[in-house]
Length: 296
Length: 320
Image (cartoon, rainbow over all chains, first blue to last red; front, side, top):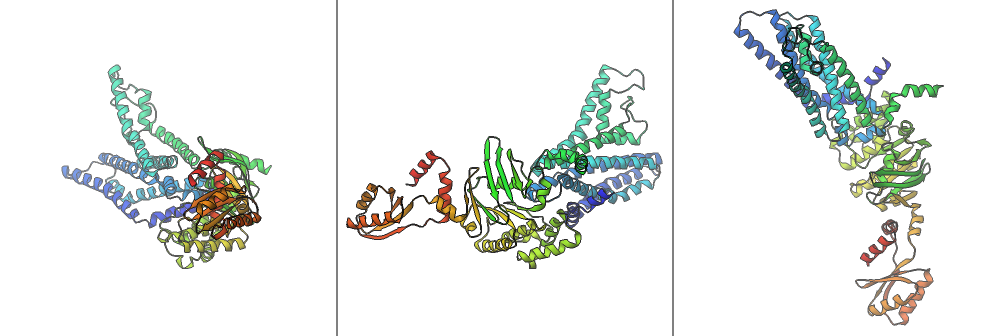
């Protein structure tokens, strides 16, 4: 708790908040985020209601999943753009050396910048809640669904933020770091889907499904478990399968665990590449032990 | 305050620093001079805990810059040769931000910020956004920034580069004030006169090596091996040149427009001898004086001498 309070009073974090809220582009980002999200969901609802006069609550889960997928795509678009310049931007502005000669540790700099950008994303999600309420109005969505979707968002945000800051720390130029972050997002979002499609097609041609509850190849399940969209749909629909093949792994849990671990590794990597004296990262990891030795 | 022991830093095959041994006492103003790429910035970055030396060790206030980097950061204020400022922050907020980075208590930050702005003459600019300040003002603000945690040692890398003469003088005045306050200051420059009046000790670096070190007078004396005489005659230029060339004390002679520049060894009696020799040959001498070596000549000489005999000759040949 004390550490949390320390992080909260961290000057870099305070400055990032101040800067974010003073920047003229911030209200525009929020505006366009809500405009695109709202535009999609409201026009969808409008067309949906026009074709039929009644609304089936079972179909609102469909709408809810759609809205969440749109939200997921928006996160994938916005977060790399925000985070890929966090460290390299300081480097390019030539403010990083000064920051590194202060008593702030590299890990504190990385973490506070990361928390600051994630806070902004949380703000965007909170700002989009009224859109969700429109869907809730029609009923049919359980609290379980909501918890699962927001858990998914949370982990995805953490991962995307860590990845952005990792490239920002690794690559000196913001431009290249941003491109790398988006390429990674594209690989995860589209590349995984293509790979999964190819694997399933090959699998089907080699082993035509004889009985209906056959299992998919493990590699296909792993790829599916790494894909944000598929895991989100999996979490919403209990009868999820790949065209007849039931997954054995709990894709949703697999996703959360894998990406949480990856995020931690990426953050450690960011600190490592930011530290002027590289091997210091080990001191950082083993700091508690060092203190004990000193105390004794 | 600062001590280095066989400090080396290489980037791939390029050796930026070669066995640097340096000592700076507490309370002195140490001027670091050398051409661009001599290794001044590299040394300063190592001392500021931003670079890890390839080999050798360095201490700041008896703290190892690699092993005890955190403690070292607490006692140094570092100003890089180029530094940026954050937009969307005012001068006072800028200082408050860095004060916070050093863990200074919230209630003290504003007070310290205002005091420092006063010190560097930016008190009336406290609410101006940093990116709208002029370069000279930014530089002074940068200096104020290095002082927020009241460090014992200031490491200033080319603080006066790109400043107009007025801003440079203002900057120097502030440094003088800091010297009075008892700070140890390490300052680098490739412009020597800028430092001559300010520094107690000067170190001249060239190609990663410390080629001379000492007070300004010591270095000037060291560089002045032999003196240069400037002789102007109204006629008999060739005759005078011939005479000088045959004289054993004269090391070299060359003509520059209407003047003869002769490099001689020995003390003042040699000058008397040469002058009477010229006069006795009825050469109309109108001017016979020793050229005073200014600090820039010293710099050129010291850095040139370090480039080895062969190169020295080739440079001398191109000069002559």
